[in-house]
Length: 231
Image (cartoon, rainbow, N blue to C red; front, side, top):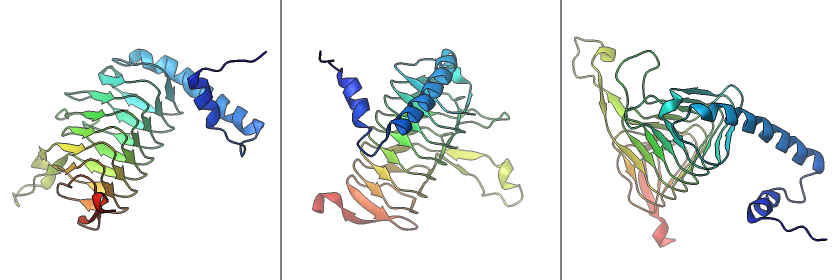
C-alpha cells in the first residue's frame, strides 16, 4: 500500500537530505515540538495569528495584544519584541526572528510611544539584530536580514549645547526596505532611508541615504558600487 503525502509534508521531508541521520531528525522535531507548545500558549495573547507559531526559550513578547502574525511564525531563543506602538507590529507569513534579536518601538520604562513595524512574507530578522522602530519601519517580502544588523528610525536632537542631548528629544523618520533585498551582517540602516527592491547591502555598510533598486552597495557611508541589472 502506498501512502500519499501532502505537498506540505513533502516539503518538510525535503529539508532533511541524506546527510541527516534519524537521531538528528528526531532531535530537531522534539525541539520544534517544544517551540510549538510555547507558541500555543503565547499566541493566546496576540491580536491576531494564523497557522503555526513556534517560540524558543526565554523569549520576551511585551504588550502582545499589539502583535499580528501570519502563518508559520518563528521567534528563536532569547529574542525580544516590545509591541507597544501606534501602528502595531504586523508580521507576514513564514517570518523568522533570530536568537537575541530585539524589536523595540518604545522605551520599556515610559516615554513617547513609537510608530511600529511591518514585515512582509518570507522575510527574516537575523540573530542579534536590533530594529529600533520608534519611527515606522517597513520591510518587504523575501528580505534577508543577516546577523547583527541594526535599523534605526530615529535620531537624537543635539542642536542645543546648553542642554544634555538626552533631554532634547528625537526626530522620527520612515525607513523602508523593499522586496527581495539582502542586508548582510553588521550593516547599519539609518533613519529616513529607502532601500530599493532587489538591492544588496555589503557586510559592515552604513546606509545614510536612499539606495536605487537592484543596487550593490558597500562602505561607510555606503555607496553604490554596481547595479545588478548590469551583471
